[in-house]
Amino acid sequence: MNFLNLENKNILVLGVANKKSVAWHIAKTLEEEGAKVLYSVRSEDRKNSLNKLLAGKPVFICDVEKPDDIERLKNDIGKEYKTLHGLVHSIAFANYSEGWKPFHKTPRKDFLQSIDISCYSLIALSDMLKNLLDKKASVVTVSISTTRMAAENYGYMAPAKAALDSTLCFLAKSFSAFSEIRFNSINPGLLKTSASAGIPNYIDSFLYAEKATLRKKALTTKEAADAAVFLLSERSSGINAQGIVLDAGMSINYFCLLYTSPSPRD
Image 1 (cartoon, one colour):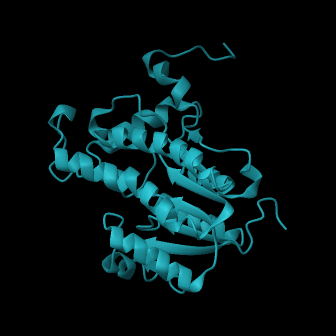
Image 2 (image 1 turned 90 degrees about the vertical axis):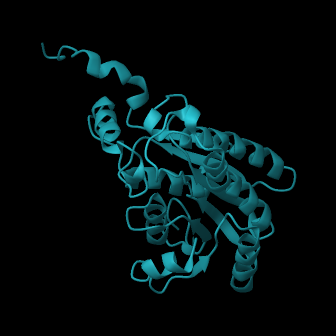
C-alpha cells in the first residue's frame, strides 16, 4: 500500500477535453497511483476527439445541461460498477464568443448557462450519484484562487466560481446527514490550459500573474492536479468543505511589481 492508498479505487472524472486539461492531469496521476479512473465527456464528438488519449479506458457521455444525460450516466455506471470512491468535477463554461464586454453588459442567458454548467452541475451530479458514492467518498471540484479580484477579462466566470465555492460547503453539510462524503475544491491561480486560452487577453494576465508569484514561475497544471489527488485520498480525511488555494504565493505579493525590493545580499 502506498501513502495515498488509491489502488483499485473507482474514481469518476468529468471534464477532460485534451491533454492540457486539469481533469486529464488529475486522471493521469490517479492512474499512476493505481486508481481505476472512469471518464465522462460531454458529447460523442468529444469522445471521438479523445480516442487516442483515452484508448482502452471506460468513457461515458454526459452533457450536464441535460438532466436525462445525468440520469443515464448514473445508470450506465451502475451497470458496471457498484461503488464510486471519488468524483472529480472539472467543468466550467463561459461564452466568450463575442469577445470582451463590460460586466454590466453580461447577457442573462450567458450568465445563467455559466452558472448551470460551472456550478449547478455539481449539485445535480452529486444528488444523482449519491447512492453509488461510497459512504466515505471524496468529491473534488475546480475553482479559482480568488473571486474577489475583479479581472474584467474573466467576466462572469468569477461569480460562477464564487457560487461553486459556496455550493461545496452546502453540499458537504447536506450530505453529512447520511454519509461521511467530503466536498472540497482546488483553487489554482492562472494555468496554461486550452480552456483558459479562450479568455480575452488571457496571456497578458498569465504573464503578469507569473511575475507576481514569489518564485517568479507560474503554477503548473500538474501542481494543481496533485493537490486534487491528495484531496481524493483518505490522507485528506480531515479536510471537508474547503478550497485549497494554489497560487505560488501570488495572493500576498500583488504589489511586487510596483517596486523592486533590495536584495538580501545588498
